[in-house]
Length: 518
Image (cartoon, rainbow, N blue to C red; front, top):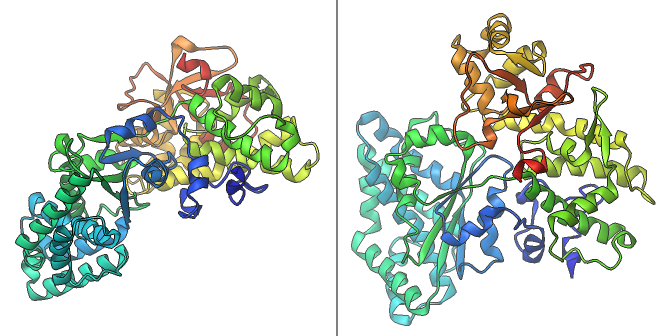
């Protein structure tokens, strides 16, 4: 019964939590029902990517955890990325001061750690023949791992080994740690698991989520990540029975590939998580069906929220609860769904934040007959969450552009929705240099393009009532600009930094129109 989603689809959050961390991992049925299978990326999970890359709010964690309900793997374990990265970084901190650290050695260390966690989980599941189990137990006993230990317990015990090894041999702590694993026993235990899983046609996957802050400005963390990337890049081969899924933020991609010792090999099985407007609409419509079924069942009488929904049905559902048109600040009418979508960077979290804000207002103030909703509730709902969305974007890029927020605060109010390269240069010279931290104009341009605050106007799709812009978050390469280009500000950023008094034509980021995909 779909009521398993009721703790998550509420009147306060009609479209559910914006953070997958808010879900109880024991609520597998709810996770399954609320997972968005509408993205083309979902189909590519069958190719067993070792890395899932996406922007903050793209759904990386949700895609990481599809194994909880899609049965692609028979066994899985999730490892706390922050804990293990911190422990390895401590081991190599002193070594980083002394001399060379090789990615191959660090990859070897990562292999030992990840596989020790795998061996511990496999032993607890008792899924191997007795002879194989004995070999695995022999290895784990020697490194102090008990049968009752959780993954966190295993990592804590390994951290103690790291600390002791670092004390014993501070200049070469990694070599000392590797000795403690006992290569022969480790290799035997690893082979025992591979043979056992292969014979029973079972598979296992290690899950490692992304971090809010990888702290890549610290040398030891960079070395640690370099070794992890090399280890991850060597996994998920066609015949492997133990895989890994490791999430990385796209915002740091260019920094991370510079850290990689061999980006071709490390990222050969990487999957990039991106979204189209129609896919977001399908996610929104599916969750809207659950909300209506729980709180306004008469509105969808005869329909089940569990039924797969098509694009035309999704749009019809939104037309039933929203006005078809909305009047923008410039006095022009826009399609309501496109109006909402252009206030996102085509990320599920942005879209759900906006819908939660809009429908929360309707649910509270018009609980008996809230639909169709008024234009005012939609515009106010969007304004309420524009700033949190923009703040999250700044947060995602903080390591690369720590002064981005203050620089935008100084510069963007001085620019129109559409402007020239000359206008941008003038504003940077007069307002931006003092706070940006660099007097390099190219770096300033790059920052605005990367965070998605600025785009390039598409002159071929100009219209009297709107400006269409291409933004870097919606293409697979860097967005280049020339001296002849016209530029534009993303609606999220103009909404925050330019106030409500401007009457410029609205900017439509490419992809906000559903017709852009046709």
